[in-house]
Every structure is written in C-alpha cells, then in structure tokens.
Image 1 (cartoon, one colour):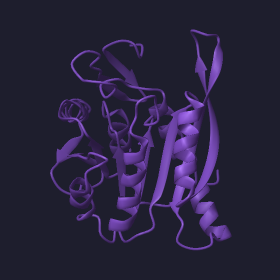
Image 2 (tube, helix red, strand yellow):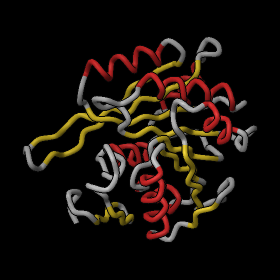
Image 3 (cartoon, helix red, strand yellow):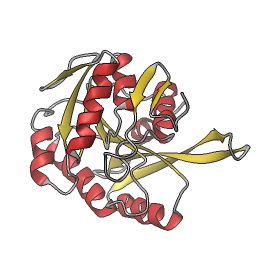
Image 4 (cartoon, one colour):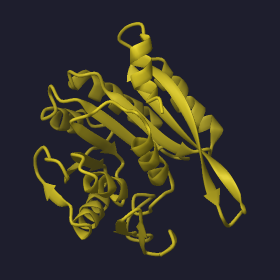
Length: 232
C-alpha cells in the first residue's frame, strides 16, 4: 500500500501505522527511514556488533536491518510506540528478545532522551561492543533537541568504544536543524551527505540529509575521517 495507508509494505517489510492512537509522530512511517536504510546498505561503514536506533517509531528500520542479519536494539520514549514497534517486528518474523540480540534479532527498550537511568540501563549491556547509533527524522518543530544532544553525549560517555552516530532527516525547518547541528559540532566531528527522494505528488524531488557524527576525543586522522564519512 501507499505510505498514507494504515498498512504498507516497503523493501520487504510490512508495517501497520497508527495515525490516531499514538501521540505526536511515533506511529507514522517517514521517508527518512528509507533514506537511512539505503545509506547503510550502500556506504562503506565499519562493522558494528550492535545497531542502536533512537526513535524507532513503527519499527520499520529495525525490522529491515534485522531481516538483513543485524543485531538491533530499537528504542523509543513512548509505551504505545514501543508496543507498535514490537508488534511490527513480530509481524515480519523478527524475534524480539529481552537481552542483547543475536544476528537477525531485535530488542525493544524504553529510552527517554532526558533520562540518565534509561541511558545507563541500555549502555550497561554494551560495554566493549562496537556500536552504530541510528537517528531517523528526529529533528522537527517541537522536538526536544537539547535532550537528544544530551542523550548522545551520555551514550558516548557510558559506552567505552568509539561510537558512530548516523542521522537522516529531510530539509524541513532550517533554524531548528542548524541549532541542533551547531550544538553537535561543538563535541562531535560532523559530516554531511545529501540524498534525493522523489515527491510524486509535487512532481519533483526533495532533499534529505544524512549526517554522521563521531565524538571529538582527538584530532581526526584521515582514517578516522573515512570511517566517519562512510566513503562510498
């Protein structure tokens, strides 16, 4: 079906959306998920033990990545959204576990960006594991970008490996986006990649951005920059 349908199938994943029962935006599938999935599949990124998604929403990206053999931790801050995410994962044959997932499995966990306890609970099982953190369409009018930045900082502090953050978002509200990116650039090496996605209703294409972030711990070498940018 189309993205506006309650149930839709894309890239081998079928999800049910909830336009009414879930507050704000957690029950809707957005194009940034497709952009991020395409980026992950096409880019020369370092291998990671775990893919940790912030703001998993419907669970589309978590399901697609688990189908492809990744070990995925899907997180969100709303109970109803987490329930929808888990249902969609099971709908696609993904086993949901309560601990660190194996290949092709997913773990669904609560993560409120402003909760130190939530971050520490998740990070406690990730010590020594390589991790890529995925952010999808989390910058929008009304989003708590200060807490999102704080969450990224706390994850970097709690996990004792060099984290790579990858964020996909549309060109939507420039002031909000620039505020978040400037804040991130104070503590992270930041790189931008541009993607284009068709907008059939408008008969044009729309700009989507993929940003990669690595914590500033030292001068970024050429090799580290290649990892951060995910050269294609």
